[in-house]
Structure formats: C-alpha cells, structure tokens
Image (cartoon, rainbow over all chains, first blue to last red; front, side, top):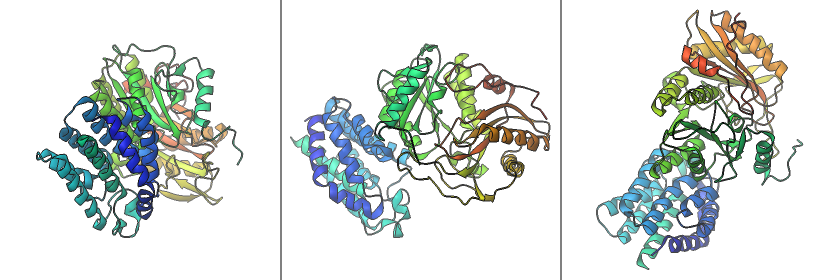
Length: 181
Length: 342
C-alpha cells in the first residue's frame, strides 16, 4: 500500500475515462476536466515521494487543480505517512468548502466527498465510503449548480452528472484498490 | 498586433531571465525559477516579518518590480493572467519564511484567493508562520456595505508599500496585519479604460469599445464594471471619478488623501500627468488636499489604454511609511510634497 501505487492506479483509471470526463464537463463547463485531471496525474505519477499532490496542483492548474490537490494531499499523507484517513479527508472537505465557497447540494465534488467523509467518520470501512460517494455522485444529476461555470448553463446543468463529483469517485476507488492491495 | 516574444510556452520565463539579469536587487529563488527574491538587503526572516505576493504575469512591473528593500521580499510569478498554483506559492513562502512570520498578500481575484489561501494552509501545516492578507479596493465591484466582495485594483500598492516599510522598521506580524487592514479600509479605487490591450496568449483584443466611449470600473482583466461614459475633456471624466470615489468613502473638508494615478500600459505619461493635475483640482474643489502622489504605469494589462485613480486617507504613520525610501527595480520615490496642494 503506497502513494506511488495509488497515483499510478488513479492515473490509469483517469486516462481511460478522460474523454468521458471531458464530455460531462462540456455539458456544464468548458470541457477540459478530464484533460486537466490527467495532465496533473501524469506529472504526479513521476514526482518525488512526498511531493506528488503538489506536482498535481502545479501541472493541473487553476482553482480545480488546487481543490482536487487538497484531497490528493491528504491521501498521500495517509498512504506514505500513515496519517488518519478519515480526519484527513474531513479536513480536505472542509478546506474545499471554505476555499471554493461550496456546500453539499451545490453540484460539485463535495457532493461525492462529503458522504464519504461522513461514512468514514462513522467508522464505516472504505468500501462503504466509496458506495456513499457513488450515491452522492448520482444525486448531482438532478441538482442545479449554484457556483462555477455550470450555474450559467440553462437549468444550472440539471440532467447532467457533475464531472468533479464523478472524478472524486475515481479517486476514492483508486484508494480503495490500493488499500486492498 | 505584433508582439515581441519567442514562444508562448516560454514567454514568462524569458521575461524573468531578463528581469533578474537587469536588476541587481533581485535573483531567482532557489526552489523554483518562477520565484523572484531579494538579492541584496535581504532580511533576517527570524527577526523581521517577510512579505510576498503571487500573481499572474502580463501586468508588469507589478509585482516583481517591487521586490527589494522597503517593499516585498518575494514575488511568485504565474502564467500570463493566471494565478500561480498553490504549491508554487508554498515554495515562495518557504523561500522567505522565518520565526518572525510571513504575510502572504493576496489581491482579491478568484484564482489568487483560492490558491493563495490553500498555500497558506499547507505552509501552516508544515510549521511555517504565515498569514494571508486579502486586498481589495475597486469600488465598481461591490457597494460599500459589501467591501469584502471587492476586487484587488492598483490601490493595493498602498498596502505593499506601507507594510513593506513598516516590516523593515521591525513591526510584528500582528501589528502589520492590523495596519494592512486599516489601510485597506481607507483605500478606494476606480478605473477608466479607453482601449483594449492585446492578449499575448490569443493575439486578440481583450474587450471591444466604440471610439467615443470609455469603460468606467473596468477590472484589470477586462471584466465589465460600472458602465460606459462618452469621451470628452479629461477634466469631466476625472471629476466624475472623484465624485464616485468620495461618495463611496467620504473625506471631510480639510482632509487629505494620498493618490495613485496608475496607467494601464497603453496610456502616456503626458496623459497620466494631466489626470493627476485634474485630480488635484477635483479634490481641491471639495476642500480635500491631494498629497504624496504615485503617477505612472505600475499595474498594467499589456497595452490597455486607460488609468485608475486610487485614494488613501492616511494617518500620519501610514503617510510616513508611504513616503519612506525604498530600493526596488520599479517602485518610485514618493514625496510628501505640500507644493502639490492646490
């Protein structure tokens, strides 16, 4: 179980799903979410230990690079340094809500992350946290965006999954695979 | 539009190459080539508070031109018009941090706020003592009751300079933060854009404007502001801007304000000095004295035509720090001249 394995596994999964993520983003935003995610992960996969999440932030760029990078940072600390995963993801979620000025229900990555954080805080295993994140992801389909580019799309993007919520599940799935290995 | 560069992918790094070799005040940071730090007159970061800011490039000379004695300790340079990433700002903090603490100045624009605050969180987690200070002054971005929703505009230079001088004088982190917040509360800025700059990324004008119209309240990236006015004598334009600025934050008759007249990159010194002269008159007609001016093009957006007027109603201490000598590539000497009083 290592951050190295996690980042390689996530890079592979995101690369496979890149076009799908771009298409989801194109429905509500500028259509590059998959591309920027993979660009960041490509750099992270070859960065030195301890600096992978930061390499991701740099290469992915923009505010989304920072917000996803905060999640990856906590996972890296957990896998390489043995920090508490539940507390780390809770901290990442609080920071994302604070910095991005988002709340659950706003149609964002927080709608996947917050249920997972809740499950882990309740002592549930990671597999159940992933399931909770998946349910949160699916619920974004009917949500209306209150912030980000999607708010300017007709109906606030209702009818489309939020691409950030989808990729957040990919992150947790990769973590789950790595934790089982 | 013809622009002089080699390759869009290297234009920022090519510029920094030129900058650090042209000025002995600065050198590249040791952690990343996108960080500019002081070369001479470096502080002992355990004894004096250090100041830094990150910003997108394309607005030179701000902010790397203000790295040096009496102003900033470091500048983190992002891509053209893009905030630097959180990890890069974190490296910038690392370059200058010490026991006395560091203030990360953040001009309030979405990407700068998110990445800057995230960097400060990560730095604290690593045990560094760092506090972010949000800066905002553009009255066209939000009404006075929502000051904290305003954007950063050229009036933020009052904070750079005043905190820079106070930090040099040995002020503590807590005291500097209070001073910075106080300067922020006393500063207002309004801009007028005349003609668009050309984005070096796209080669295209950043906004369009009929020949006989001026945008009031334009943001530094071409964001729309208060609205449009007809062109006419600059006297009328400046009079209207001073009226709006003083309506927003009144200054009592007999009061005084320090002034920044900032050119956006494509406006001549001849024009900017005329704006300053009209500013003095418009303020004098309200019995307010204009003092300690900073006139020139410091916060630019390529060759955008236009200017902004920033007013700070300073207390004596702020005025002293505003006029204190500095030694940076681009910060001018500020004279607290009484001769400019009308």
